[in-house]
Structures are given as structure tokens and as C-alpha cells.
Length: 94
Image (cartoon, rainbow, N blue to C red; front, side):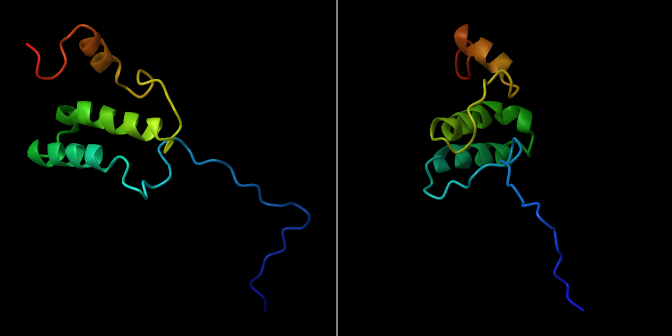
């Protein structure tokens, strides 16, 4: 008995991956940003709220290098960080 399936005349059409699935960074273009984010996670006992600026920087790197679809940072959950930066209240400023 054959395990091959006959799909008839319909052909499979690939579709782009869902948000969050994107090409690997084969050339390490965003490796520094990824390492900063992972180091921050380790140093903060994996409390990702402490590392959001690094996450934002990493996603910006990926978008700038077309490793993921360009999205407004507000839509990715970084509206508060953008407001802080525009007001001069970013990390390290007092």
C-alpha cells in the first residue's frame, strides 16, 4: 500500500511566515544586539521587562536589515519607550 497522497489538481502555495517567524541572521548582522538582550535577561533573572530597550534595539536591527517585516515600534509594544526617548528620559538619563 502506498503512503503517497494524491491532492488532485490543487497545488500547494506557500505563504509568508506569521509575525514572529523570520529568517535566521546567518551573517550575524544583529548578533551584538541579540547578545546584549540575552545578557540582560540573564542578569535580571529573566525578567524581560528589565530588558525591553535591548529587545527594541534588536528588533530595529532586524527590520533595518530586512530580516523581518518593518513594523511601527508602537505596534510591537514599545510606545512607552519611544515616548521616554523623545522626552529625554531614556535609560541612563536622569
